[in-house]
Length: 277
Image 1 (tube, rainbow, N blue to C red):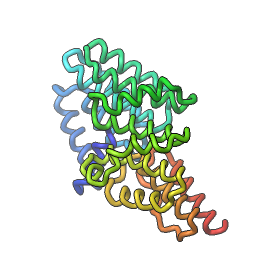
Image 2 (tube, rainbow, N blue to C red; image 1 turned 90 degrees about the vertical axis):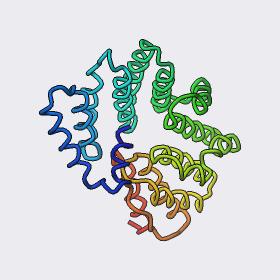
Image 3 (cartoon, rainbow, N blue to C red; image 1 turned 180 degrees about the horizontal axis):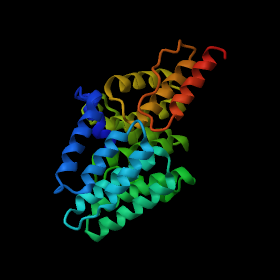
Image 4 (cartoon, helix red, strand yellow; image 1 turned 45 degrees about the vertical axis):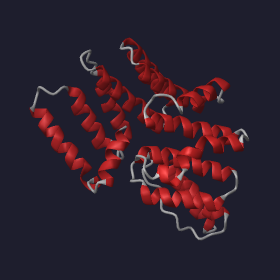
């Protein structure tokens, strides 16, 4: 995903140069006409990500539209980038439509793993616009151990654990997260997977009223995950709520990495509550 690309630049110490690197690459691609527009569009999306996500969407749409029968994997990767950015922005209808388009492309090329991936994205977007169905829970239960990408399994696991705890299935939600939330396992995962799993961990702890655990996990996430991952912003907002509800001083950082200002606005409101505003 595009946030993984920019996030890894931050982790490697190159985060402050992400825009310069993408601009230099775009200059090269603009001169070299043998390179297709898809790669140029993706680099423009990288440049816009984090400052103008809607512009990033537009460039990813260009990349996804540059379909090439000779490179179907790249086409599906471009479509995945687009649908995941729509998910991050809360464009649920667009996410569903792009996911269905990606699934059709995957079926045409016999790529069953990609079909499962796009169906998962469609399921996640659908859960945001209507009550979660038993079919959706069944699908997420299957995907979390299916032969798909680790990041996709993590998204299914996180969403399933959150739905289960909201439904009161406390023990089952803990079982779903157990293998992923082990500190030794979690620390060895990529930042996107970490951010997604941590989001489910803090939500579950919040529902259980374990505010100390919310703060502990959110602190670890902030120290370990580079900016650029939207679920990190939500985790930091939960950290601030936990401080407020437990009567502690507000020491949590302002949210980082949110594609929308929701977490930042919520965290600012919590600080105002703590200050008696």
